[in-house]
Length: 315
Image: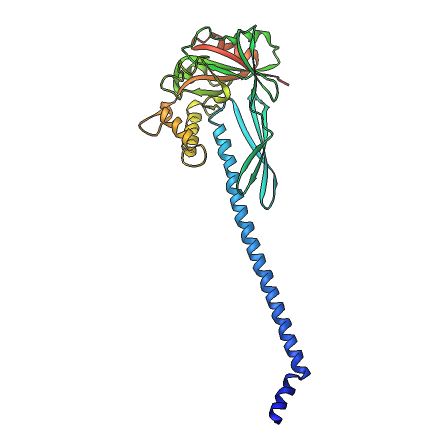
């Protein structure tokens, strides 16, 4: 009997109760600490995962910027990241044209990137197109800044605009953009020998075996500058710029949203193998500079058409 009472007394002993309470507190503290550590690990994993996904989605902007180097006459994209949070990021993209040694903003957009989507905000790519009684043709104006949009004309066209003749109407302190369309396509080597590289900003590449013209679909005989395929020219020369153009196309053809479009361009240059710079044929060019600097192009027999683009003060 006494043994049973001793057991009861032991369980009801105050020191035993304190020991049990202490053990419970330790268990609760241990579980709480484990929960916090687990939560931190999970949050870190989620943050790392979301950051990785956002980073990969933001890298798509670089593909857009790279594609802007092969499509759109005398147009370039630059990007800045305005804000970066746990689950989304917002970027600002500026679209610019170069005239002489100055850049002008041609358009801009805000882009919101989340883990599952990418949305462009506040970009208007539409144009104000109207018939000019003076020029006897349709003329487009950029809605962002009101400047003229350039147009290229296919060699087969007739009654083509000759707007190099407008140069004499501009003040000598004006920077002028002109799109030149040739009588047929030229190799990079031949064209550099004819044009030289001074004041040449961009080259329009022939990406169609029929020199880009389809009488059924292209009855207006021109191609808007923002739809043209080509590349910019710098001090390195036509051939080096052409190689960079091909490198960009090859890279874009392997990943991203532009695979199909760039593969089609590469095939148009050479159906049998990877193209090289000798496969590039040029149908036109964008030149910029003062009226005096551009006057030399008026005497070139290869120019079938010329259209005015943007104009800004030199200072």
